[in-house]
Image 1 (cartoon, rainbow, N blue to C red):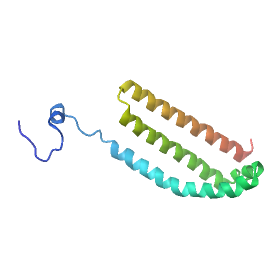
Image 2: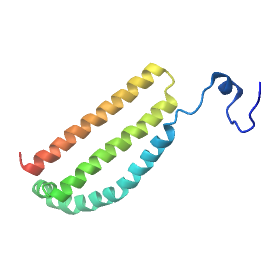
Image 3: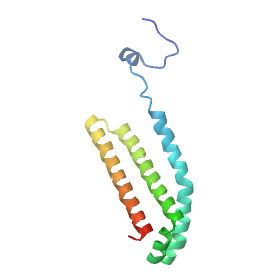
Image 4: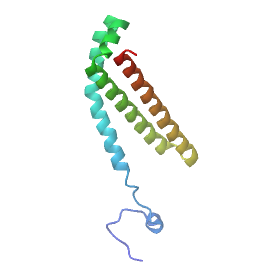
Length: 132
């Protein structure tokens, strides 16, 4: 059996033929990209929320959300936050849950809950935007 000096896999990994799943890097980059997008969106919403909603109350909040600019950024913020959350929880589950069935069910339910919140949140913003 020929040993390849450039291979960093263990002997067991070479025998089994196990290698990279080729999706960890993409997942890592998406997690970093969503966190970078959340920085300006988070700053925008923290400042405008406290200026308009906390000081103005419910009616001012409705007026603030009815702005097309604000509602568009709010939907983007909501979807990005939920995608970032689902990705982060998925990484934790993949790293620390060892039972394959529990791992798959956990990831499924995390994605289901985040998708449900995304749909409900987007519908709520659109409802306020159009005054339905």
